[in-house]
Length: 155
Image (cartoon, rainbow, N blue to C red; front, side, top):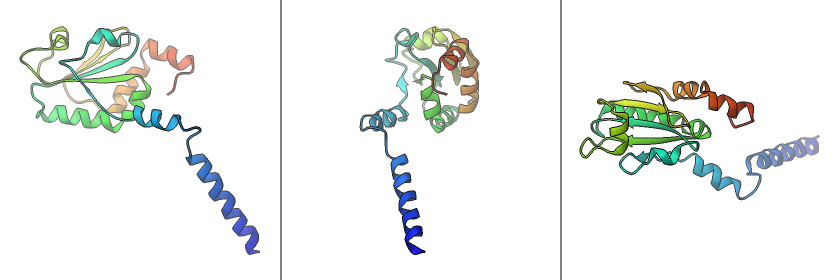
């Protein structure tokens, strides 16, 4: 009676180890890299470089010490793997002078969250921090994202 139980535990252990392992050695680093939250500095970012490649989420504040700015980054980071799967790039800008090209183009006042489409258009502006889930819902309603989903892009 103990032999079948031991064999059963061995099979469960082997199966769980197989499922936990990456499919190949190249997949593990790519997945880990995609899940690293690393906002791009607005002073060096070029929105034109992201057209048709990424969905910029631009977070503005008058200071990096702005509580709304810190809260917004925390909310985005909490949902980062899901946002990264939607081709999001987070750009932060907390420098008023000299104003970056992005700040001059989008013209925020104080704290501002700007969600842009892949074709470079402003989709939504928010004056208060927005939860990552709300950002994902807004992205999933975009026509380009809906087409990506129909064509089998990751959810």
